[in-house]
Image (cartoon, rainbow, N blue to C red; front, side, top):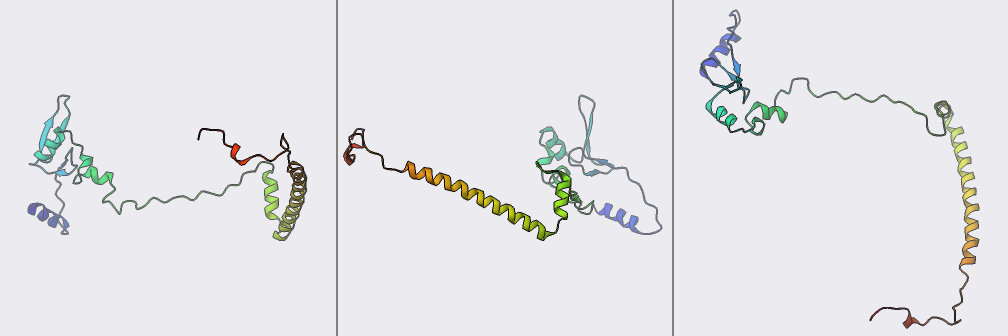
Length: 172
């Protein structure tokens, strides 16, 4: 690691052209593999896997998913770690207001009603409420008369009051 930090220092100094090092990516961890490091594995189907070390090779052959190991890049990507400056949060678009017609009212009628002065609208609504209350009081008066007729005392078959002990018809 000391050697790589020296290379980074050289790259940072002005006037020196950057040396290009060909690196590969580990198939398991997605870490960079520098020349002279790593292990290659060629599967039966001819696919070449390049691992950074024997540990990654072993985990791959044990079929342990890299997403389940916290130190792999796959886990970091899955759990949204790192890369904070890239893009930031996605901007949410506000939905544009759109007015639809309601059942029993066309869109033009709705627009006219909105355009009316609030005082006129309130007066019209108050008149409608008053008419509703009148209608409801009229309806309430009719059932009250019917209830009074229904609540008239009913006479027993024998004409006497029922005995309190005879109401239960089960085993005691």
